[in-house]
Amino acid sequence: MRVAVVGGGAWGTALACHAARLDHDVSLWAVEPEVADDVTRRHENTMYLPGVTLPARLRASADVAAVVGDARLVVLVPPSEHLRSVAMRVAAALHGEALVVVATKGIEETTHALMTEVVRDTLPSVSPGRLAVLSGPSFAREVASGLPTDVVAASAGMDAARAVQAALHAPMFRVYASGDMVGVQVGGAVKNVIAVAAGACDGLSLGLNARAALTTRGLAEMSRLGVALGADPLTFLGLAGVGDLFLTCGGELSRNRKLGMAVAAGEDPQAYVKAHKSVAEGFRTSAAAWTLARERGVDMPITEQVHHVLHEGRPLLEAMKRLVTRAHKEELEGIRG
Image 1: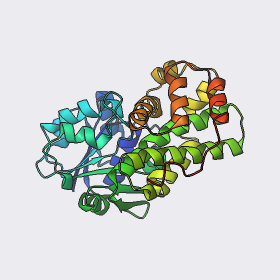
Image 2: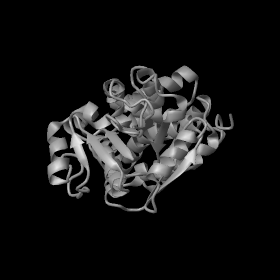
Image 3: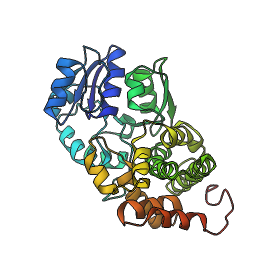
């Protein structure tokens, strides 16, 4: 199959690497010409995924039309803040029968739209039967290194999800199918916000009990938001929910956890984000998710505090105090639907 991966960061490179190992004809689009040249000539993405040898058959280009061209599977993997502009560039070159997969995790900050909603706006020719989302616990470096990984592909009606499953499933990259696009996307977005809080928890040496409690209550938050948007609450017990949440909150490779630890060490969050090439999606998603929660009347206290610390300058210890002094609650409040 002719596969185009649009986004030359770590995750896009890892997905392109995996697809190439399955003998698909894969092209990777990178906005930086030096990344495209690096991947094609040196078989390594030294900017975003150094030390991982990529398949020699994998090609890369800074020309989006050349990459998307006649591809039958197009995987969109830019940072969430750039998905709209990148998808608009893809639109003119997209083949009329291409299956489009959104692998970006986040909520658009300006519109509070889920990533597939952004794609529907920018790629109106793509029917619901040709649009899917891919998520789950998957550090890019481990996927690119061929280590065992399970993910989930979701689509309306599941036809597109099953097509993604057929194209990308492998013994070391198992793809499960789901019909809950909303739940899979909410899980993939909100887990990054909770991971920032988990990193701050670890940075403050609050202990394993605290991290376990924070992660579990974070799961409650993402479930409440998902249910309010129409998701199946059981989705959050799967790969895009607890799976990705636990990986991102506790894994040493988590960019969002590192952001939280940096804030706990006294670094300015905005300066930290600007200084790092790889994106910590929880930074922008915290603002979008908190605004969306207020619009929908959903209680998300951890997300609220992460937003105020990252964007409003609230001291971390004050945010912690606000969380631990909240009134007692019923554990499953707002989740049952």
